[in-house]
Length: 547
Ligand code: AMP
Image (cartoon, rainbow, N blue to C red):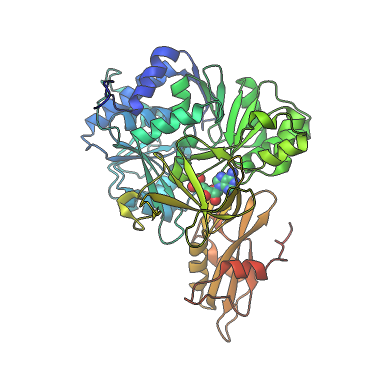
C-alpha cells in the first residue's frame, strides 16, 4: 500500500518561489567586482531569475543543456543558480583559478552552451573562447555600457541586456526531481578532472540538512556570508539553504582579503560565515593587527581543509565566535560531517571541548559513513583505529558525469555501493570523525586542488628529467604546498630554478611547485607505482625554503 500524500517533486524552483513569497524583503547584498555594494532581495532575485529562464528559453536550448559560469559570489550568480536550474538546465560553475587549458578542457567536456562570466575574467575568456566550440553565447555579468566594444569575442552580450529584454513572468516547469541541476568538476586523482552532477532532489535534501540546528543552524534571523566561492560545490549549498529559511545573504565578490571581509561582516551585521582556513587566517590577521572585535558574528563554519586548533581557539576565546569544523567533498554536495558538541560535552573543561572541536565532527542525517581496513572490513569506532573512509547517501555521487573513471563505488557484503573518499580517518564512540591522512594523490593548497600527476607530467617533459614525484608538504598559510622530487637523466643537467621556470605557462601560477628536490631514485612499489608514502617518509625532515 502506498502512502496517500501528495507526490510533489523536490525542485530547486520551489526554493526561490518560497523565498520570494515568504521572505521577499530579506536582503541580498553583494560587493560587486566593479567595487561598489549592490542591494537586492529575494523578491528581486526571484523576478530576475525568471528573466534568466525566459532568456534561456529564447536560446532554444535542450532540457539539461549546460550553462557555465566563471564568477565570484554575487547576486547575478545567484540569479543564474535559480534561473538555470529552475528552468531544467544544468548550471556548471567553473573554477576561474584553473589554468586556461584546464578551463577549456572542462567547458568542452561539459559541452557548455552559454558561458556567463564576471567582467574581470574577460582576459581569461579571451584566452579560451576560440577553444570552446560548443559555447554559442558569451554573457558578461555587467551592465550594457560596461561591455567592451573590441573584445574579439563573437556573440558577446551583457547580462543586463540579455535578461533585461525578458519578461519577469515565467511558470517554472515541473519535471522529475532526479533531473540534473548543477555540476562541479573536481581535480582527478588519476587522469582528467571529473564532474559531480547534482540533482534537484539531492540539492534539496542537502539544503534541508545543511540548515539544521546541529549543522549550519541557519534561520530567517541570520545574515549569512558565504566566503566559500559559488564555484566550490555551490558555496557548500548556502545559496539553497538560505532561500529555504529566508536568510539575508551577503556576497563578498572577489575581495577576500581580511579588511574587505571584516568590513562586510560589520556593515551587514553578519551572524554566520563560511570559508576555508586560509581566508579566515587573513581575517584573523586583520583583526589582530588592528585590535578589532566582531559585533554580530556568532558562528563560522570552516572546512575544505583541516582547521588548525589555534584558529578554533582564536575565534572562540578572543572573539566569541563558535567554530563549526566541517568535512565534505565535491562528490558529497559537499556536507558529510560537522562538529557541534553534544549535551554531555558542555560540562567538559575548555581543553577537552577544544579537542573535540578539532575533529571534523559527526555525520549529518543522510550520510552513512564507515572506516574500513585494507580488506574492506569495518573498523571499530574507538577514536584510535584509522582506516579508509567510505560514505553513502542521497547526496553522494554514484557515478561521475559521462561515466568518467568507471564505477567509483565499492560494494559491501550486501552489495550496497559505498563511495571511497580517499581520506583516512578514525571515528570515536560518539561518532565524531577525525581525518588523519589522505590516501588519494592530490595536494590541497589554500582550499584548492593541485594534481600531483600534472606536476609530475610537466617535470618529465623536461629533457633532463627521467622521473618525478610530487608530494605536498605542510605550510603555515596554505596548509600544504607541492614540491617535486626528480631524478635526472644520466649525464643531463638542470638546476632547481631552470626546472621551476619550465613550469611557467604550463599550469596555473599557484600550482607551480615551491621547490625541487634532486634525488638518486624514487621509491617504487611492486607494480612500478610511485610509493608516495615512502617518499614522504624519506623527506620527513624536509622544510620549505623560507618557511
Ligand atoms: P573538495 O572536493 O574540493 O571539497 O575536497 C574534499 C577533500 O578536502 C576531502 O576529501 C578532504 O581530503 C579535504 N577536506 C575537506 N574538509 C576537510 C577538513 N575539515 N579537514 C581535513 N580535510 C578536509
